Amino acid sequence: MEEYPPFAVTVDLVVLTVREEELKILLVRRGVPPYEGRWALPGGFVRIDEDLPAAAARELAEETGIREPAPHLEQLGTYGEPRRDPRQRVVTVAYLALLPNLSIPEAGSDAAEAQWRSVTRVAADRLAFDHHKIVTDGVDRARSKLEYTSLATAFCPPEFTIAQLREVYEIVWGRELDARNFHRKVTGTVDFVEWTGRSTEGGPGRPARLFRAGGAAVLHPPMLRQRADN
Amino acid sequence: MEEYPPFAVTVDLVVLTVREEELKILLVRRGVPPYEGRWALPGGFVRIDEDLPAAAARELAEETGIREPAPHLEQLGTYGEPRRDPRQRVVTVAYLALLPNLSIPEAGSDAAEAQWRSVTRVAADRLAFDHHKIVTDGVDRARSKLEYTSLATAFCPPEFTIAQLREVYEIVWGRELDARNFHRKVTGTVDFVEWTGRSTEGGPGRPARLFRAGGAAVLHPPMLRQRADN
DNA sequence: ACAATAGTGTCTATGAGACATTATTGC
DNA sequence: GCAATAATGTCTCATAGACACTATTGT
Image (spheres, each protein chain N blue to C red):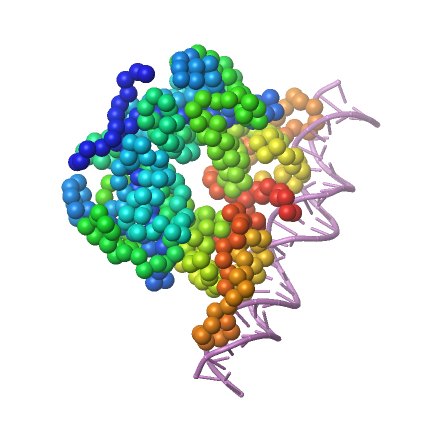
């Protein structure tokens, strides 16, 4: 094999959850230059014998402690602009992780500080490297995948009510949905959700049925967002 | 910065076009081990000061001669399984390129042999490395993006008829579409296509109006594929 | 006139969205 | 009973799909 240029390869994580009625992203504060003190995506080097999804899962576990149940983790894209890291040529493979609102760490293991930050205010955080672009891509991906996949269930606990699922849509899309139409739509889409046989108890009002994620990955028909031209 | 493992980074191209009433992919025959003699995706090393999309565009130009008009080129995904290349650790960033049916080379510059191969028969080609998986992902991406984006126009020449556009859909999806409903749908979707003011001439039957791609990237409403459950 | 292809119109079923109504709980 | 929340039903409009029809060319 001919000579080839050496690259560093990292994984970076866009970890999203819904909490406090906002879409939040997990960011860590950098403790070393460059961009010391700035917020950045959690991530790190891929090991020489490690698969990319394994590296992403490892970093996620290190930052959040989450291993089970397997969170949603998908490749988002790869960012390799030559000067994105001032020190050397680094190509980073970004992964998108979606988590339910767990009471997971306000601080990760190998980061000075970790925090859930509102995605709507992340622009003001002046993130390190090209992480702002990666965050934008991740949030866009999540928003659009809610339309045609059952991804919203990844933001919910193992058992959830239709109202909880609707809240996920409303917060991620930043738009209110009609509760009655939403209910009809979700329960009418094959394998989107599956009734557990149980219901909530104790609260005010009629108990809500508890569902789990159904087998469907892709929704037919999709949950269409209202468009400007409608 | 701490020690980091060195990786080789390459770009690989899934170049698709529609010709001879089939969806075709550009493959090159490997002239050296490993996988000598096998079909593989065109691609090569990313240069140390080269951006990833630039590397993809360069490889595409080297293999096809295509530079203008700018073909559709999007990042498909990154493949980095530790032993995908038996020689060393190679992470490859795959790009998806869609081209109109140009009379472009049956042989590229730096490949022993290049050929348009039917995607439906590519499984029998026993591709090198993990390229079969990359091809599958690229074809899936193209199929699904035809639904909700104006990507089909990337398979067409700068000016095309509605029938040509429909043929692209039919071939990529492997399914016949009603010509009349398709026409109504396409012309009724804002900014999908734009009439040039001209029409075809010389052939049998009523002349067809010539269109160019409109400004729309995303289609509202989408061109829905028929589903099994419909 | 006729074949061939392009383009429009009509009908029906389905689904989205607006919104009324009923159901089931706690207090 | 009343408040609160869940779940279902009704109506209207838009659109997909099936398919009849009209338009415009070459021969």
